[in-house]
Amino acid sequence: MELLILSLYILFTITLVRALLSLLRSSKTSPKLPPGPVPLPVIGSFLKLGDKPHKSLAELAKIYGPIMSLKLGQKITVVISSPALAKEILQKQDLAFSIRSIPNAAHAHGHHIYSTVWLPVSDQWRSLRKVLNSIIFSGKRLGASQNLRQQKVKELIEYAGKCCQEGVAVDIGSAVFKTSLNLVSNTIFSIDMADPTQDSVKQFRHLIWQIMVEVGKPNLADYFSILAKMDPQGIRRRLTNLFGETFELFGRLIDERLELRRLRKSRAENDVIDILLNISEETGEINRTHIEHLCLDIFGGATDTTSSSVEWAMAELLRTPETLKKAKAELEQNIGKGKPIEESDIPQLPYLQAIVKESMRLHPPAPLLIPRTVETDVEVYGYTVPQGAQVLVNAWAIGHDPSVWENPTSFMPERFLELDVDVRGRDFELIPFGAGRRICPGLSLAIRIVPVMLGSLINSFDWKLEGGMKPEELDMDDKFGITVQKAQSLRVVPFPV
Image (cartoon, rainbow, N blue to C red; front, side, top):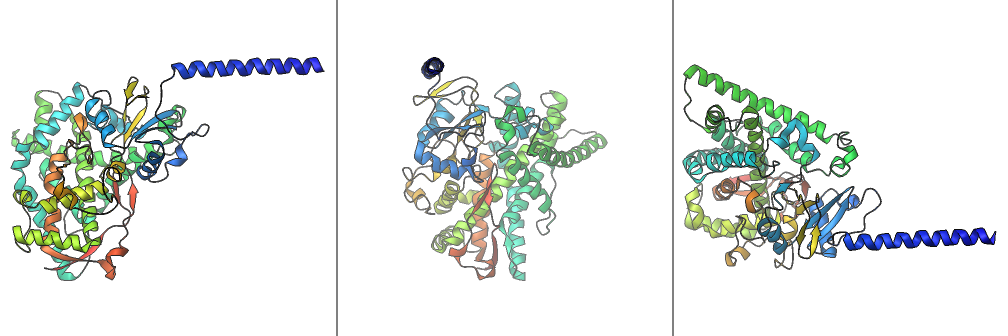
């Protein structure tokens, strides 16, 4: 018996020593990961994400630092939460981090192989990006369509005026979404897809938001390869249906245009869809499938983010009446009381510009930007981001960092009157649109239309919260998707100025 116990003891000791030696050899050769929470078996740190990952990850960054790693299932995720590290990822080592981490959900309808959002930097991506930059969001195109944007803002103000006469509340997010939708649909298809005075667009807005929610959801299929085909949460299945509805709508509009071109026997470039169809017929660089997926990218990116940005800014103004009073005073002095704002007026309105920046600091449209990945090990500030790791840049955490911003949770537009900080991807303290080669292509449109809509709304009317709600009672909670919206819609009653 004693010999058996001794043998088992020796065997256990040998096994333990071998395990320790193996562990030591592994630690010498394995990459030095950024610090992070100790993962649970199998699931890793999934439970730490919660339903608002941008906020959960910001709290974890306070413990583990501005670059940290989490094990989520089988995948390492590296989270960046400081301006210096964001600059390293998005500018200094931009090429190494330019590949998107494609969620399983984006495989619905093969969207990942046609979309400028998910395609890797490649010839196809460059062709599609060129279409966006030179045809849709170029300075020349935006300059030519300025009157169209002004007309759509005028319609928004007319709708608010009708609500003012009737004494009913305006759902700011919904009203701005309708305006943005008509602006984009006129740019591309020369039609209004929604009547600003009707609720006909509610379903389309819900469709776009559901797409954003599903793509932004933590998905087990992204973190456990064995589940990729199974789609256990049904996210890819639901997105297949949502994309299908959207492509059916775009397909009908494209068919109508093709028939019109056939009857007219003309290929005149009257709007963006004509230009895209001409490119398809002349060069073959893009085909109809590319066009439909490109429309999904544009409509999804340009409508939801614009409406969300205006709604958050309006909510912050109504919650801080003194700030709203200052904004109205600037507008009255420079534009005239009750007048709508034009794009040419924006340079004269530094306080309005500061309001937009401050709102985007607190409520970046895409709080974690779009996930990235690396194809090889990359060293960042002495740590290794391993091959295949997912990389998140937490723009929300950067905007709420007390080491970067004084009183970071307070809405203080005045701070931007003294700071030379912009949203164009050059100042990494404020990157609501990202930075580098994969910066949001719609940035140039957003910086034109958001202040014009917001300034026109607050200069044309006085506003009160629905139901006699006090400013301090306004619910500022958010709900998470790829974009972040107000959890409770902002409903306010307009009054004559």
